[in-house]
Image (cartoon, rainbow over all chains, first blue to last red; front, side, top):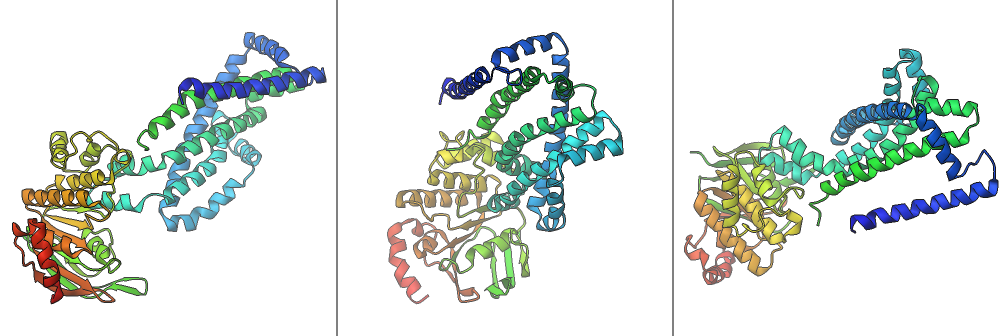
Length: 248
Length: 228
């Protein structure tokens, strides 16, 4: 597919969603379900205020938590996938943390470490690490024994094995973890902000909630969805295509 | 210079003994065929010598110098080009050397292609070039001609001999094909039994120049193995 065709279908699909929304809002005719026009007005109003500050604060938190979670989670997952002993010992821990509710982690982090930026980011990362680890563990298990033997026979060093033998095999698993991760991380970041940060989209939505300002809430949510879509289209997508160039 | 010396007592996978007592030596430069039916344990023996199968009862003295391997499947890194696959091997001697080797196996045009975009025969030849790039003292080959069409197999056989001639490497070539053993080896080890042992160890009746002639190989094939 050309890039125009690749871009066209998601756009048409989104346009359909907007149409359904507009019709529903028109039928409801209520402030509690504002249409696209009302949301756009709220967006312009908020943009004149602190919209970009809040957006920036949230994006920084998302980026920090995402990088932390991907780094630590991948290391844990690959280690568990490659070593059966490690998986036997720590596999249960993974299930424990996977099922620990996000809200509990967040509250415990705030209680133990205080209402700090580092506690907020740690809470989000801890929520995401088990997911990344589980995905990458599958990747570690699926590593080719044939290629590992080849690398051994030809005396490839640790760095060459990692960069040229192991990591390329894990690329699809990184892509899955990253894509799921971004969506999950930003949802949790909003909760963290709502509970204990003085800025960010979560904080702003909390204030708008006090006034039942649904149009304002949607304006923040849509702005963020656009940013995440842009990351998908301009960062993850091209990276994945480059990583898959060798396929037949 | 010392060669390869294998003095194996047994190799088990769990309770199952795959290999029994196996003793043989390969002096530097000698080409030895390891002949036996599929599933007899030839690959296991090669893995023990290569060191990818660490759990062994007995002793394996490896030759001074490096050991290379041509696997039954090419085992190239699919996300790297044929050239990069050679360059990633430590001691493969730089890009000019790697390109020259690829040219020798008829792959100068394909050097910058990824493995999955070329034929199996070409992948096999690239794997051969990779093995020879490190100037090994010993090359282990696991069914190097299997599942190639007759023309590709003949070409691969010719290249294989040319590479061994040029580097002077010793070779241990696992095969189930008598004709292939006679066409490639100075000496033929036959494997058989359960657990498998070496049932015969004989010099080939054909010298290096005569075995290049397919007719001579065919003429010897039945007669020699008949009372071998």
